[in-house]
Image (tube, rainbow, N blue to C red):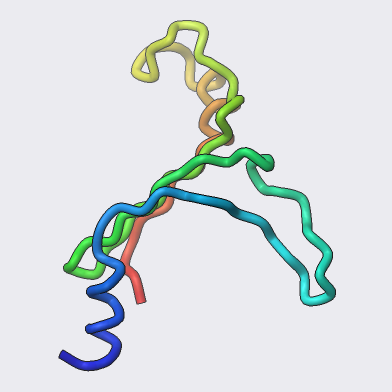
Length: 90
């Protein structure tokens, strides 16, 4: 196994978000994309795919309490508070 493959293998699994901030080169901390209490998980699969889920813990609740029901316009605000990411890793 090459160095890149060995390093990639160390990341395989599910990881919980501990903290997240955007810091500029001058040290200024920028606005948190999803707020200062963002929660999330990232999963790395051995085949090179990944999936990340980040969300605001205070995101708006759905009136129906059912993500499969309701009007699409009413689903937008909660979904903007939890953008999913998936795809191949490096």
